[in-house]
Image (cartoon, rainbow over all chains, first blue to last red; front, side, top):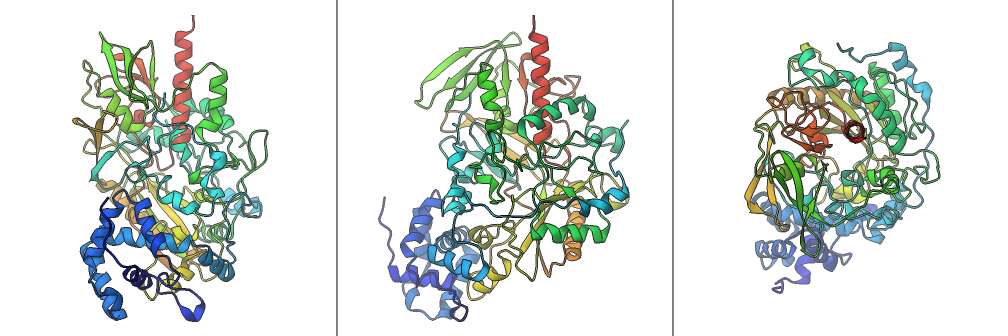
Length: 149
Length: 489
């Protein structure tokens, strides 16, 4: 495997650009959370040709991406999204995957929405039993299936 | 004999914090993306809908949402009723006894008395619970005066000796550790083995050897790459339209020009409504809430024949929501946090599941030159939407919008065609009375090679607006019953 040619700063800036967070409402930025290594790992895990995609991504980013203004970074990613959708989609998938499986992000989601930071099983979720009376209007209208010869 | 192995659903990914990653990779519906050891490539470059099936003991029921409607009486007479496709060589009533047996084996929750279907036996379990999103949709359907009904689901809603009641965790598609959601392995395997079935896993059938109109043997390859030839008296195939076509094409002295043609899928649009308040819409089995069969039957003024089902889908986990779930990803950049907050827990979706017609141009082609890593010929899907389906889908999207608006959705987004939805592979070896217009006989036996029986949905002469599993399992039970009677001394 050929070593990838990239800097941690570039990956951090890339992730921050994709998920910049929203400080005023408590959402952290993806790069500032230190998700760079996890992002690289997930590019490889989720995509059969992960290394190739990563190298193509880094080749497409300018050398000074990390130091560019936010507007320039966004413009750069918009261009990649348009011209290299396969690379961009794979990047976005790995970035979102790193962010939304991160325990700290899951704690924030729990605090904001009530969605508990735990796997769906074994606890599941309580729901009310189905209320049959809601079907009364449907029953009143009678059968709608078509008779056959 | 199965190319995959057993899946231990007791250890399903839904027990782990990173369960949503499984949906993106090891449990992805598309074998070309999933790339598990048992998966083989399918050339889908000429298909607007991508293949979706699972290679394991239990097949695609390992990966499914367990929605369990029956085909409807009119689905068996598309030619007589609407002048399209071909009538089935059997009717709904012929299959009911086998549907009833299958319901017992799979364990179905729901409610008898559905006004869009003939009367049927009581379900084994009460309907699934309602989430807030389902209640909004029910309110909307009642406002519109449309049919709706709780979905039949192969999901237990009460404890039994082998299954625990569904606890509404959501992601049925990555296996059910409670065995509440049935799959073919958990429902049938123990009984089959008790009856003497020997299970051979991780083994690929590479060729069927025939002589004088009889299958004589199969060539197999084990996971250690050892090759064997096994003699046989009767061969039963359940490989879905893709693998069944590949295997039938391996026979040197048999051919039927209809084989492979008339591939039917379920072209599906997904319309999602976002509500102002948090519905916690991720709670409950993702695919089985309520359905509407208001538009299943032909009404010619709509401009197309046959019809579609509207099926409610609940919301998804955080990652799947961000990735777009049933539609487009939440936008990246400065608006991302806001976009995610407005989507997660707030969305309910409706599928527009269109009945497909069998058209020769939609087909499976087998390339004997291009071999996969098992040494098998590869299949190529050729599929595009026919004009009837396009009109139906466009009409259906508007009805889904109408329903979601009536339910109170503030924002609606439309995915006009779910590309990763090639999960109902129907047709390509249709059954019929005559070899001239069919590939298999009404009992699933191959015309011209009578000791091969096909029991998957490739024998369907036409399709339906509803999911096929209940019907295809009934077809399989019927074929088994007829075979047992035929072979009894």
